[in-house]
Length: 307
Ligand code: PH4
Ligand code: ZN
Image (cartoon, rainbow, N blue to C red; front, side, top):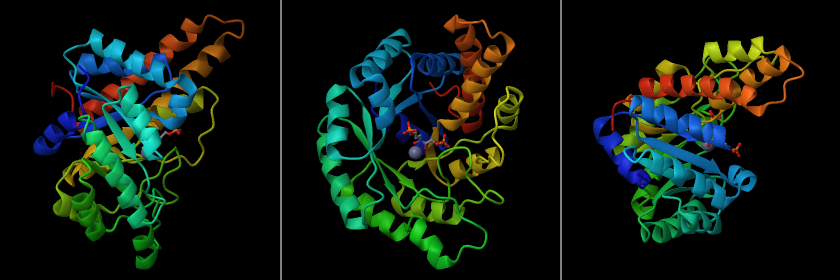
């Protein structure tokens, strides 16, 4: 059943567990996500970025998610716009049937971010749609970074308190040192958990971790064995994800891990038989690999058996 993101995340916030928010760009990814949620009885946040919407078409995104949601009526599902860049983009998604949106105005100044987020909240809440916003910049933090540099990049907890009170956003993504993609840390992985705890203490709403892929060892290895190159890749370690949940994170954005797992299998089939052209021969093992990653993650974050 399609529900607002609030319905899924306020329960996660009260009970102290995390819910993976999985990005998709095609039928195969979406099918893998739904089938795994069904298998482990997990609530679901499905997300599509503006790029994914451009690729699939807005109506197709909503239509596909609605069809799968109706096949699994016992699973609470939120369809979330990931990194919406404008009020218009959020409005279009809401009109089309998204039940949750992110307005990402984090690259604007604080006042502009606040004003844009407020505008989206006013519109979205009138349709029962939840809203996520972001504070700070998604960027790795180095060991030798100065306090000033850290403050310029990461979320400011006092600003977070004002921001949440003024905008009434439902969830906040505080920058604490993660970044998108497969290369998150130059040295040892490092996140600012103290800052996270302070944001939670001052806001007490569900918090979101972007750039939360772990690049699990077995997935990276499989990519390598397929002939892929991921030299220097580093994700967020599993124990960091658990500590982040203890610090107040409830929505854990996951995209890169799924992409890597999928493509490794596609390449293996291509390598093994260069006269193969039946798409199903490529995508069936790819979906199995993606499902294994999602299953491990749902269990680790604590959303399994929460339906
Ligand atoms: N996201 C996913 C962003 C995907 O434009 P696009 O479709 O490439 O955008 O919001 C994440 O936070 C994913 O984090 P990850 O890279 O660690 O999986
Ligand atoms: Zn993100």
